[in-house]
Length: 231
Image 1: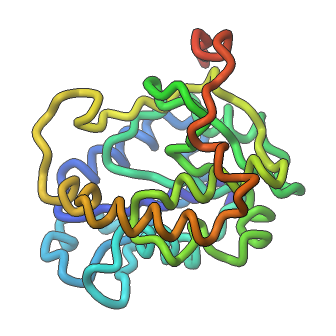
Image 2: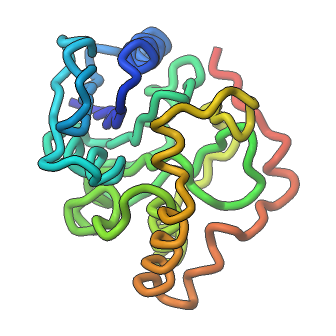
């Protein structure tokens, strides 16, 4: 298996199924892609998810999306692991693009664009299995529940020199902060003020001070204007 899609979702079966369908439809080689749903044990909608995917359940409620992504990673087999969410849309032939940019024999993290951000924060983790092993067999540090887990991953990847720049590749993030759409219960859970306070505290305690600037460091301006045409 070449690529594993680690898809954390909660209480959004229609949106989650549509996202899976879209990602596979836009892939060049869907047969080489493994898709795994990861859900909370108190999510009563999980039976509405596409049952052709493997579906794994975190061990207790309230652990957050980090636990879900990490559990999906534990069950995955791909040479490259991709953090998947309900609100991202990939470019055409995204799998071919990723495989062309990463060396699966090395510990690498691919830095793509979400179509909005102008800093170095890696909103979507795309890592080789070698990087997964180097991190300690988790996609994200397990001390986080959601927010600031991507800050941690970004800081460590840049600080340790593991990043492959690919900001010309755009995976569009349709988060309400960008689209103005209504905030549902899942977004509210993930973005609660206490989650930010806890995440910031954990980040400050775990990440070496000399790495902590990386997530918010501005991108070089020429990189912001690039877009990848995969057709």
